[in-house]
Image (tube, rainbow, N blue to C red):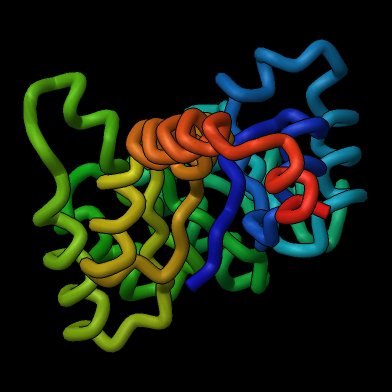
Length: 222
């Protein structure tokens, strides 16, 4: 199980690396737009501090343009992974780039069937979107198991990457249902390490501790 950090923030990458939660990084145009640096330079800086894969997403819409952009991206760093969309043009680009042994991450997958053509050519990662579907009124949780079974049945080497991990439940359900990789935003790790009930329990213990004499506290705390 690998954990990628879903961010373009250098500060967040450095912070969560201290928690051993940055096996790689996933970026996208939306995340890059939030940073103040020139986008290519931002990718270079991310690659300079991350040892694992760094996904860079194409913004072009035809397979020819995607390929051209991808060939430009791989010059940035040896750990760049090309993110392509899970559609017809994305597949055509993936098929071409795969023959050149360029590592690929297929993104914005919402239905298990979308993995079949990409799994057949053994792309490196297929990103299945989880939390975003809840904005549209449905859960994609069961799709995790189905997608994983498809990969097994077609004997694909593609790894199932779960994205849009918005909370603790998304995190745990993705793991137990067969994800190989999770890309998690910093906000979700903040929730994990600032659990509401853990904080309430700690507050209660600290409150009770106030009843101890200062002499005893000093002896206990050193």
